[in-house]
Image (cartoon, rainbow, N blue to C red; front, side, top):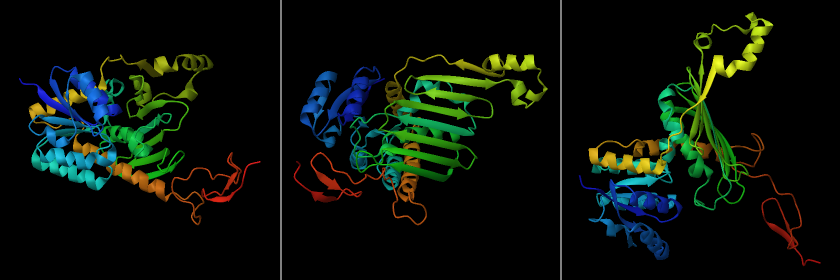
Length: 372
């Protein structure tokens, strides 16, 4: 069977990783990398043995499929151009910058019978894949995704940058429409939101609390999932998971703590997570999530099947992200009759800065005087 001829468009942080992974796969032949920055493009090409190209249209007839790892605002234009040339696409997350664009991309791929996969790579994280079959009918999800500021993906805010991963994972687990969204957020370092907390209520009754920050002093990528039968903690960064299985006595609601003697209560205190709520770490799977993502992409193209993270899944994540951003923008920090809405950081007090400029709370210079 011939190898899939793959190209990577965009040689930034993620594009470089995709190119290196693809170059090492037996199922794939990395034929080209494309970027408007000739220096970066040539460097990645030299590292991987691929051809360096400047224009996406140069891939027509050269590649069978493309990984799109350009900035989010360009996903739609680049994807449309490539799909018009008959190329299958793996588009890095988020699928697009708006639901309208996402809908159009999914529709176009369907009409052209092209595979459209979205780079929600946490779906391939062994911390999740090791137990996702045990997480049917979730009732409550709590996710935290925090990092320091990386100066990457500055064209988007933290919802599309980080929270989109947990939106996608939650949607894939719950398999139920989102009926209500509440959210608030703040901007800290620029015009985009940098911290957001969102609450999703699903038609099934499941509730998901999602928190994302890219101005955090402590890195974290965790998710807790509670189902009628078990509870799980997933550490995406460490690629590990922990599972808690209640005993049959607990599940049948036959355990009555008031009936215990003092000695029995002491035993429960010391052995709670061994006897009644059995806790165990699941085996760590030594796999590369991006490699698994690319292999699934190649499999879907070869077999004519849908990938694990289809364009439709990416579109649904964008739809929920838009709802979250709408709630962030509408949040009234001063109450129902206040005039401050949206992702405002704490107001800056009137102060004299190092250049002796006095600023108002809306960042307008009121007085500038010569220092000293």
